[in-house]
Image 1 (tube, one colour):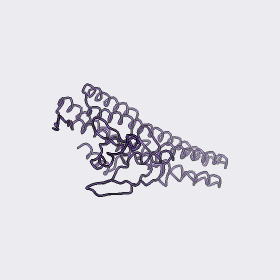
Image 2: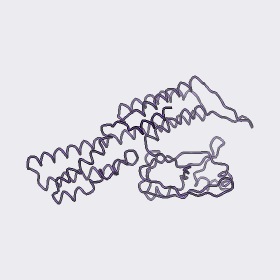
Image 3: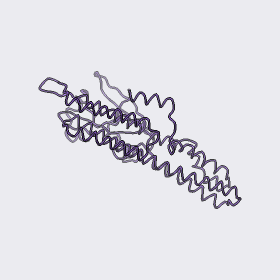
Image 4: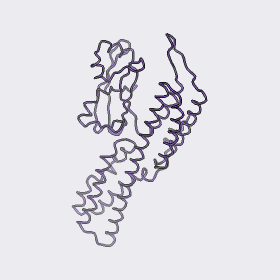
Length: 321
């Protein structure tokens, strides 16, 4: 089982600019290793966790284990706060870092967490733990609508502004229904809804930026092709085209921090733009042209949408079931 690091373990990495805050998520800017230690059954355990660029890090409050409670029982309030440990609703909570493979998986995960939260309504009355049914009709209706939303999102090839608007409207209506109910589990569900809205907007922003860069690279390729055909290409014009293509590469590297988008711009084909200025200065017009076309091919699937693979379809069917 993959162990989740504590948030306090990566605070120094944020200060060193090895990890960056992106709203309520964290992006890894360079590979880092963290030692995660824990106790279980009176035994010490330790594992090295690799945090690599592209993965989604989500800080999340989790209830402390009995071993953690025992370990921290003599710590002062200041020491607990330094470890990001708090008391809330009679529970001891600690801030841990959840690792998620990409933004799409993060969206699906948080959406699926909402009905799970609504169903598990366990409360303690005296010394007895009891499950509360709540308003069964309202809960069932919200879960049905969420499952429909998950299915629609999983089928989407492209995160368009229209899709984002539609999903957020549906999430808002579900949230408004839940707000009529009160209690900790409803609040947790509302937090998940807000997360889904934020992450969907981030995905839309990423896809818009990639689409704009794809179109700009296409114009550069057409311009270069026309200059080659007409015999009007000069070294100066070739360098100008290469410089802009290189700038597009640097822009996306700085802006796109999460998979599945990050892994696209890290492919050798897209990264061929790294040497494009060098090729231009040496007059290698065909190499410059091919570098731009290869980079475009890696952005095309995101810019215009692609048919999902058989493996992706299997994953999506698993999400819906």
